[in-house]
Length: 203
Image 1 (cartoon, rainbow, N blue to C red):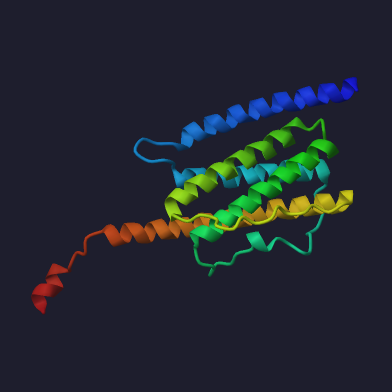
Image 2 (tube, rainbow, N blue to C red):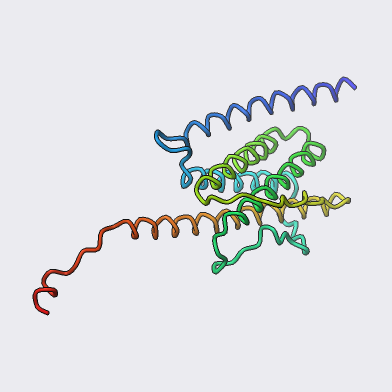
């Protein structure tokens, strides 16, 4: 009982620490005159997911394989369109899955504070990204997805979690590319059309 109490206290302290880190990250991405810096927040969130994946594999094994059912909510392709509502639902699903991983890792690896910190910080950033993307894409998740179900057995749990982290990383890389392309098109539309004066005079 005493040991469990100490673990609970350590976890509570870790949560407070990570909340402070998330708050500092939030202050970095906010700029004057706009609600959030989407490009910077997206890059920061993707990096944090990668850090969580590294910490997870180090704690649970680096050859876990892939959870074969996968996660359709996070599956996208280069030709997939950027739909605000779908992106919002995917980020909701991602945050729910990451929270389950954090809860499970607290039970499987109670002493791995770095892993807990990375996962908790990742959840916080994904939720912040969700709000930021909503402001940019003007879409809301009208029908929130059901939380993903983690399997029962330990190895399956690890494989499931590893695959979800990989899927989250790939999804954020896709979203990052789509946002950059979308912003580039927006900038090009705003540029004034300049005629080639030499050709104009010639013709």
